[in-house]
Length: 104
Image (cartoon, rainbow, N blue to C red; front, side, top):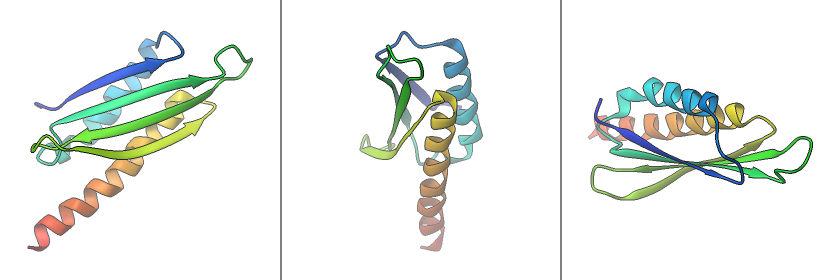
């Protein structure tokens, strides 16, 4: 698989479980490698000093033509759940793009 992912953490140092979740989601969407050259994932802790921070996850893809395509923005109390939600939205969008491509 030649597709890569850049992960940026904002407001906190990041964590191995978040990288593992993002990696698992990337593998899950490997079937769309022809449509995606790279993924950008930003995970931001909003109110990081609070007892229960809120996480904002933004997911963008880079097409093989080097176009930036914002895909999803999800938020939640669990960064892992927000990552899964963002990739779920990306999957739906990529399925639509793939279906249009096969229709021609």
